[in-house]
Amino acid sequence: MNWSALESLISGVNKYSTVFGRIWLSMVFIFRVLVFVVAAQRVWGDDNKDFVCNTIQPGCTNVCYDHIFPISHIRLWALQLIFVTCPSLMVVGHVKLREKKDMQYTASHMGAHLYAHPGKKRGGLWWTYLASLIFKAGFDAGFLYILYYVYEGYDMPRLSKCSLQPCPNMVDCYISRPTEKRIFTIFMVVSSALCILMCICKIVYLIGKQIQKRIKKKYNADRILFAESHEMTRLAVPRSEFRSRVDPTASTQNLSNAKKEKAPIREKIMHDRAMKLFEKEMWKSIHQSQ
Image (cartoon, rainbow, N blue to C red; front, side):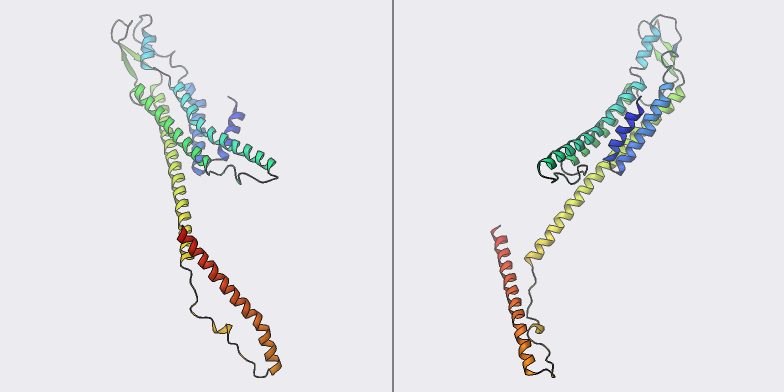
């Protein structure tokens, strides 16, 4: 196995994952991939060789082995890991496509960007990420059902009976290390169930966050609309705009100069007030037309 290629692939997937996604990825890599590579393959390595039936009839042992083990646990788990990890590549591929489009847009529009953050889960990328989570949970649940259906449970019996041709009668067959295989089977089933739970948590988190964002956006829009439709107007002009304290020590010339200086200010205030009233009437007419 090329561990460097696997490490680069996992780091690329981890870069665009949420907190739940990083936990899920750690669980898959540590509790499933490493256990599968290091321990599980060795436990099932001697499965066919040490499968024994109490008969010397040629072909009976092989037929009974094929009946008891229609598909090897190792190959089934290998397929499960491949199918479960592949949906993560959908997100990586979508982000790479966004980055490529952004580079082309930047080159043709003099430095402007098409996406502020290509890895941000918005728009189509959000749906891609949600679909990848659904596929992950679905594949894990499907393989758990296949394992349960094929072996009629997750137990590993010490004794199995077989009466298929060419066996002369009902024979007893024994598998090697049934307790150890049962432990590894339950471990892989529990780790798969935890991964399904993490995927469900991520789906709920994404949908809940999206709903919260939409509610907040609608609330802000309603506040702006309410403020525009219920704009407060002053009932009276402040006294400070028309009356001012007169300095008793000031001369008549100084008072006349002060009035001349305040005249443009008063005209500006009246002009601003007229503009505000005009804008208010315009907004009311726009809302009524809509």
